[in-house]
Every structure is written in structure tokens, then in C-alpha cells.
Image (cartoon, rainbow over all chains, first blue to last red; front, side, top):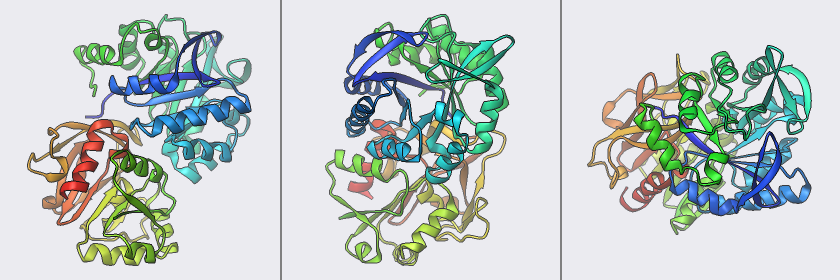
Length: 250
Length: 199
């Protein structure tokens, strides 16, 4: 039976893990290579690295981090943050990433999804959607949550699937780093609208909220950052809890 | 020496890194001449069935690999490297696989596709590929098509995703798995080590 994936996310800037609240107020949380090793030992099903530095230097440092992690950690690694074209996708994959997450570039040039899937396979292409509630809908935001594109997040997920994305990484801007729980309505809407896997992200503060993301939000995987980096729980604690609640967990 | 067939498959690098971690000498095989120089072969692969066959043919490796398989030489296929052993695939109806196993690959129905994530594999405890592991162990899968293997005696591991299918096959010195041992943490490394040392 396929299990629900527990995926730690490392927001990295200039080689350091940082974590913000609503994409701002960043706090230092540690060395990414050491954290990746630790999460692997604790049973993480995958690891996501997001470069939030968005400078050339930060990108290079990030690729070095991925290179070092992939030498000794043998679980799937996803790299995202500021990836704009096929060459940058290739750079990330060559550094040791198994998948790339694209967000702003895909909103600007949706064909990038088709091209990436054709070159590297759909399984490589994760469409990251930064969604924020606007009225009774959610809009997909670009530029790290600063630019409202006006694109409906649910429609965008469907379009990405048609274009060949292998997974959707769905991040709620409203909930990011707040610990108030995933946006279940958003997650469910998107998960029920596509047939590719959906990873819920943004807002996990309690173990029960992770359970809700799967049971009520219909997510296939949950992404975690704050909950782990400040040692509130280990990946093993989280998995034990979710297993007890009856979810299929590795 | 282990040769890893390089025809542009996305997981090539991860497979090399896993072997390096296990301190196992290996090299890349890009031509028939380089295939001659190795005595064990790993065929990795992600992506489409038809494209992989096309790339293997373009590199002049398809026919030599077919001969390799027909002679029963030591072989390990990963992911698409398992499906290519079949006669064909629903994915690319006009393209023939190696055909050393009877059957074809079919698309998953009624579930999220691709299947992405960790799923369990049931196997016989006597199977050398799974030595030291318990049946039901989890491995990492990424695929949209599953191998329908006609002769169940060739199936070494079973997995369920809406359909119960062959996630590992074994026939003499030929072995292949649908999942990614190079991305399956300690269980995957154990399996790779088993193939190197016991198969």
C-alpha cells in the first residue's frame, strides 16, 4: 500500500536554513547538510530544498549543498526557488536533485512545464503553487508571494497537470509559518481537481493538523518546516502519531 | 567491473552515487565497445518506454544488450530498466522491448498517476536480492505503468497499487526492480549490496 509521505522542507539562503512567518521575518535554523542527514535518519520520505536567496551566489551555494547531501542521503531530493529555465533545471538535476520545483517561471512561461517534462520526464517536474485567498477563491502568487497574478490556483493546478507536471506542491501563503494548520479547503479543492499527487504545505503547527491535511484535505504528502527545525517534533514522532491514527506510513 | 548503461536516463547519477557510497567500482557504458569491457550491467531509467528504446538504439546499445540478456549474463534493471525487459508497453504500442520476459507494461487505472512514493514489496525470504530485509519492506516508486509479467515464476516481488503487480523480477542472473533502490534509503542500499554480492 502506498504510504503518505512526510517531507521536511529546508528554506535555504546563502547555505543556511532559514524559516519565516508568512514569507518574512526569517530566523536561522541550521546547516542544511546536517539537517538533511538528521531527517533522513529519522525516516523522512523525501527532502525539499528551496533557495530563497534568489541571488546568483545563493544559487551556487544551494547546488553545492545538494551535491553534498546527495553523496550521503539516499532519498528523493527536490530543489526549487528561482529556477527559471531548462538550463537551471539541468544544473539542479546535475547537482544531485531528483526533481525541480518551479513557481514564478511557470506562471510567466507555462510552456516551461511542457519543456521540462519532455526533457527530464514528468516525474522531475513539481509545480509549486503559492496560493492566497482572494475573496472566495485562491490566486496563484509569484515572486515569493509578493505578486498576485490573478490566476485561479485550482485552474492553474489543472493546467499544470495537462502540461505534464508530475506533482503539485501547494503552499498556502495565508498559513505559511503560522502554525495554525494547513488550508484544508484549498488543499481539498486542488487535490480533488487533479489526478497527480498533491503535497500540502504551509501552516503545520500540530500533529493533528498533519492528519487533517490527509484525511480532510486529501493530500498525498505533507511538507513540514517550522515544526521540525525548532525540534518541536522529530520525523519519527510525527510518523508514529500518524500511524497510530491509522494512516499508512513507512 | 559493473557498467551502468548511460543513454541519458535521469537517475544515472543517483545510481552512480549509491555505488560510490557502497565503495563499489563501476563505470559508464555508452557504446558497444564499453559494454564489452564489463561483466555486470545496470540499466537505469526513468521516462518513456519508446524514447528509451530509441536512445538505446541510437547509441548502438539495444542489440548488444539483447544479446547480453539472451546469453543470461549478469544484469540489473531499475524502473524503466525492468519494463524494457518485457515485450512491449501500452505507452508506446509500436515499440518492441527486449522481450526476455513475456508480458507488457500497462497504465495504472483509477489511482493518482504517476504513483509517487514509498510502497511495500512482498517477497520470499529466500530471495537473494532481498537478503536481510523483511517481506513488506518499503521502497520508493515513481511510475505510471506497471509490469504485467505473464510467468509468475519470474516475479520476485509484488506490490499493490490498485492492481497487484510485479515490482521485482528474477530469472537466472537477470534481476530488475520497478522501484528506485538508489532512492530508498537503507533498504535500497541493502538491496543494491545484495545484487552486487549475492546475485
